Image (cartoon, rainbow, N blue to C red; front, side, top):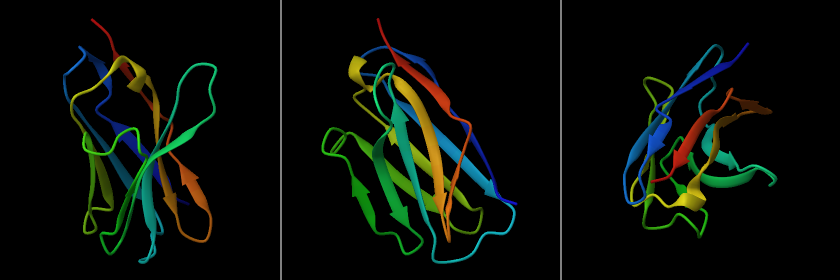
Length: 114
């Protein structure tokens, strides 16, 4: 069984920063992909960023230059550093681990508001 536990969400003013963390536990195989997705009210869940175990990254155009994804393979943990946050970044952020199938975390709320 695989479990993902996210942390680091909260309320921040526009222009501020937050760092999300997601720790995976259980039977984790190498060669996996970890990523962050988000879902705003009334919208579909969308990709934010992914990173392979080898460090290859992929970002949504809307967050390029502002968000940075990274991972610690020894800790099976993925991070999302979010800078220059905008109100439109407000959403529930979900961590996903993909091996033979996808595993989701429970989500963490990020609210960008003055």
